[in-house]
Length: 221
Image (cartoon, rainbow, N blue to C red; front, side, top):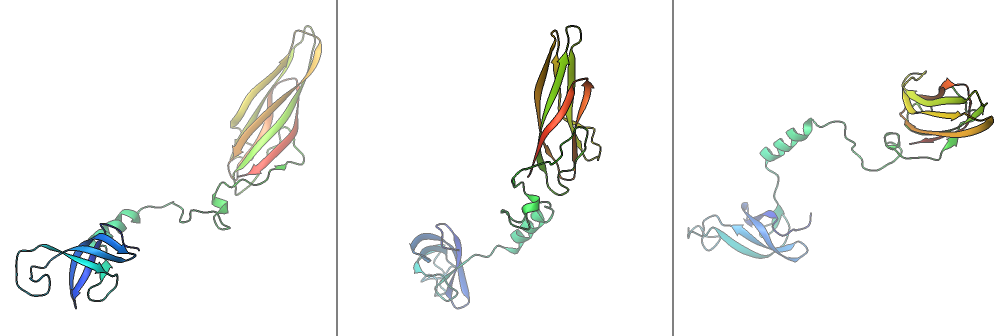
């Protein structure tokens, strides 16, 4: 540790005899001036004659362990014990602040996405057993209506820890066509960050329109 203004230090004033003080000026690097408390002797602090002085100045003091040199002040045992007690119960925090091979599985580091080879409606899928995954589902709804018979379809995305998930996480979305004799194709998109080891699926919950999953993209986080 380099010298800092106001830093508490100890100075070995004679062999085995120490005084405590503060750095009042940095001369160069670790060579400093120190305002140190005296030990009640005069001339300060080498002759044992009390003169009432309580502090004195030491100039151009180098850092070291010898006589006339300064050292950093150790943390008192009582303070150190209090710090140890305060942090002893803290758990669940990472000991590293960067991503490497060991930490990658614990961090949300996106990787290149990949398409699901055979996307299908009502087909539960687990994208990853160990990493969260961003899933984007593209679908179309084909509708045919007449003047008397409208047509619709309601679709939702589900995901949870069950291999047959039932928790809605996207939608429901409804596509409808009515009042005219016509056909139409309506696009739908769902996006959800699936937790590690969870499953997802897209289901048609109502309507007679034809729902087709056209593409699914998965990007591991």
